[in-house]
Length: 305
Image (cartoon, rainbow, N blue to C red; front, side):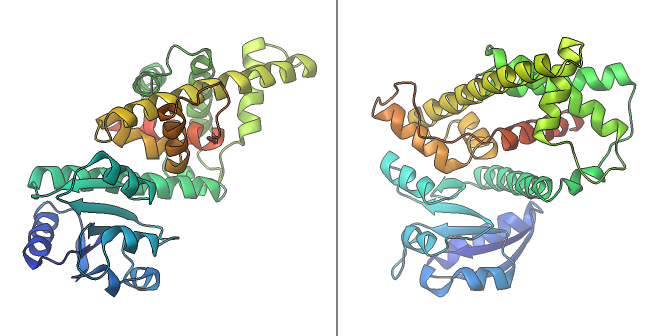
């Protein structure tokens, strides 16, 4: 993992570089003392994975710099002594991944950067899924005894649904059935270069649930399941948005908001809740496919760790 540090204080840059190297988080590929010295082309040329940038700098501050980095595919961590809710909200709305307050705390920095690394790796896995899902096909784990392995996996998925505040929703049962289907599918098709499509998953789970191949009945169940799943995912979005409104540093909000959802959509839902525009019609968009595959990847990762 390649880090780039932007801060007008050389002591801070040195301290961060030392923490990253001592914790074996990655390599420092460069430093700068002001945001005006970097742009998108420069970061791509340096192959920067994670950008650490100070909020207050003399020529161009952190927020203005981030605005000029639209399209940057890496992750951004902002540093600042300012800790107002409004300032943190604005920073997150511009796409930063985490907000670290000064004075620098070594353990906090290590914890945050480790999370960012994990999220970046997860993002790369998702992008792999979107490119015909070829990445996952080469990562099949040696099979454990079937009952034990599958039981542990489903328990991991249930834990995540509980963390997301959606386990009591009817759609959670559908999601667990999909996790079970995908878990068995990957074991049986590890040589394939793709995972089944969302339609295939819904169809297969509905067919098994009804124990019939009657097209009309299966299609009816698929439509009902799609609605249940969307309602459950919407509940998870609302739950995380509520946590974020209360405290941006809430561990669940930090861990899951930008992992399972696009943060722009989380912010839309937060603004709706804050303005009490909660009439059952939300402008926040839900990506069902992303949610399902992120849930699968995260459940596998937790089971294997």
